[in-house]
Amino acid sequence: MERTSLSRYSRPTRAARRKALAASDGRFELARFNLGRALLRQSRDAEGLATLREFLDRQPTGPLAAEAKALMEEPRRAREDFAPDYAFVTLEGKYLSYADLKGKVVVLDFWATWCSPCIAALPALQRLAKKLAGEPFVLVSLSSEDDGARLRDFLAKHPADWPQVWDQKKETSQQFQVTALPTYFVLGPEGKVLWRRSGWGGTTAGELDGTVHKALKAFHDANPAAR
Image (cartoon, rainbow, N blue to C red; front, top):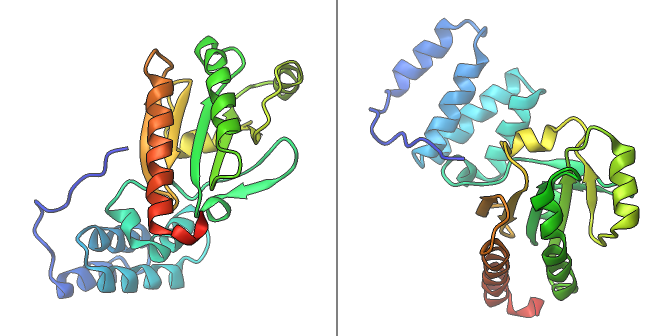
């Protein structure tokens, strides 16, 4: 999830940018979106936000519109490693989104019942969820099973008392560019990606636990009234 630095590129003049956009005659709004994002990456927020607003005025719906709105809400998304604007529904029917979980430390566990390392990780995840009950913390497991009934059968035999999601179309997995199972993310209260790891080994539980506790300590230090 690396972000390419734009610092080595020369900055186009405002007149040149406007000329290029005008020449597209409205056919290439992608250029306007990319320009707005590039300006934000250069910390030129006023210009970037104005350009993204122009983009949204012309293309108010669709995936790029959603990303433009997220960038306008938090311009640092263009410069730092923030989670995508995710949303999903748990097996119990509860809707959860980036906005719903903002303000909490979040662990996302991408797994499947056929993945033996994923199963090996379950006791450690269970301990983490139990230990942090009452904290501003949420653990969510997202399974990319092809068969939802198999997932429900597995969970009936191996209860996991934290939110479970069937990522049926692998939409969230694709958003987070997950290519191997298990894959874990720790997100800070603002949605910034603090840690990502694929696989489960001898040190993974300790790294996960340590990252979560460090994030919670930072949150409590910044918000003493939340203790």
